[in-house]
Image 1 (cartoon, rainbow, N blue to C red):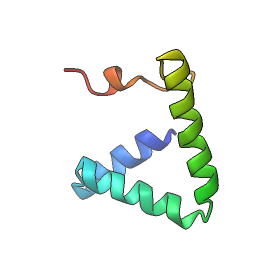
Image 2: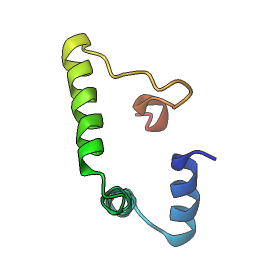
Image 3: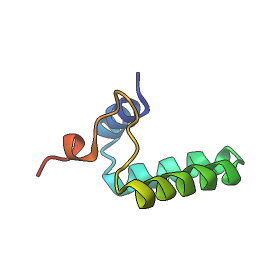
Image 4: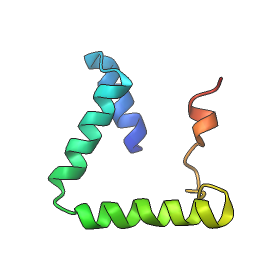
Length: 70
C-alpha cells in the first residue's frame, strides 16, 4: 500500500484535512532524524525542475494533476 493511500485512508477515518495530513507527514520526517537526507531530496527536486522545467517522474506515482483535478 502506498504512503498516499495509507494517509488518505486513516485521514478519512479520523477526519483529517490536508493541512493535518501535511503536519503529520512533516512530524514523521522530523522523527526520522535525517533532515539532511530530506534537504538533499528537496534540493535535487528543485535542481531537476530548474534545469529541465519538469518535475521528476516517480514511476507509477500519480501526478499532481491526477491527484487534484481542477
